[in-house]
Image (cartoon, rainbow, N blue to C red; front, top):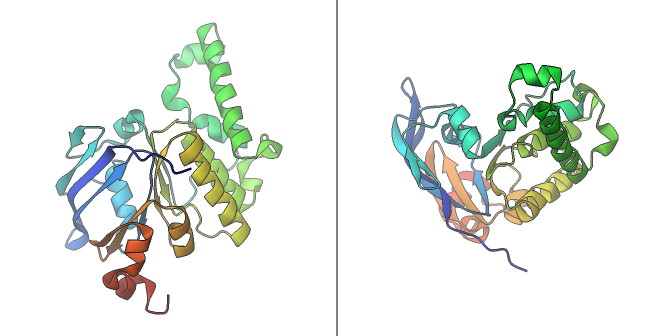
Length: 260
């Protein structure tokens, strides 16, 4: 059964970003369609993380615009981006190591909590009901990611592959429309990568979440992506289906090496 890819949900136009005299991104344009898995690939230093940082408001590009669901922004503000439904995981895990798996994932619900801190502290009336609803959602995510056995375990005690899964869970707790994954498989062994691939595809399939991911493992990219954009030295050198990108002489030269 082929999945239905929708209209453009995210449109990146002519983004240029420089730090001092160093150009990180030069005139980059590409779009992301609803319900697709869109990969951004390229060698180290190609500008991939910088691109994600522009999308989720960490960096302000000097030129260009980003359109999300028909609204165009010169600069995305990271809080506003999160409120609009864009969640992000990072290369370096930014988890609360001393807190349990459950509490880490619960922290991803913060944007959705409506009762004030005073009501939350007293767990009074609506606040208690609301917390119970959020907790039920978090338990669903824990089941989905198959980490029930570690619910109460401090995250710092978990192996790396499971910590990455908790990081994904925290992003999912925001119920994003678009999920930005920055090297979700980095540092994993083959088995952990296979698990993470399955979860990314399930998130895309079962939740209908649009996924944009940076990934170095070309096997993974070719297996799970609908379309791939290729960056090299901050410029776009390829954009298309995995098969099209794989066959591009420019991409082969810059990234894959002729042996692939």
